[in-house]
Length: 241
Image (cartoon, rainbow, N blue to C red; front, side, top):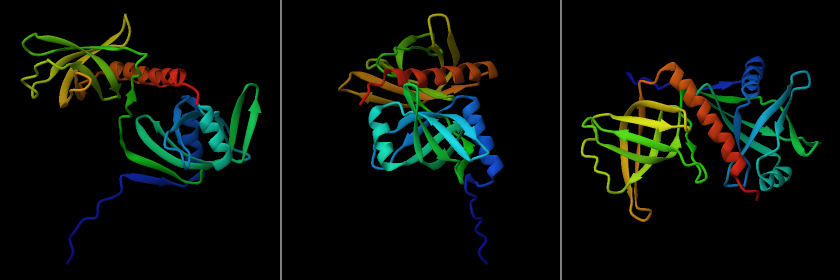
């Protein structure tokens, strides 16, 4: 007799119209940024849900953040969307049926999705910190030795930072004290569990990555606001193509 226990999939297929509308409303209400992939395009684009017309079954999405994406969408019509709701990834596909001009921007009208892939596990979406945004990170070991780095990317659970190549990390098992300086007057202080250390000889730095431990609810909210702020700043600094 086969006693193998089949592993349950770690996602739900959401087909219920009411639940689909509820998920779309959460994206709209929080003004969450969604990642858009267009067939044939390697680079993802950014948009957001502006409006939901439940009577006619329509979604209205903001114009893509780069001209090249807008032009490609007019040809391809398909949008593969990925987004996060309270740390949970969702994915769905839309078909644009009209691009409407509203003032100086375009708005894309699509039918509501009939299927959403809703992951059951919470994932931490990482946001890359662009070269125009220098964010300092300070580390301190249990002997009081301190070294500084520059934030490379950040999520709701961890960070990666560039640190001087000559930094000696002899003990990777004991958590470090870590301060992420979000601004001149705001920082997050937490224990940092080292997960990896990688040397980049060409750029002359070490890449240190790991988890932020034992964050309070207030710190998690602070981090969530900062990650969303970084996402919006990245859009501003992306050059048009």
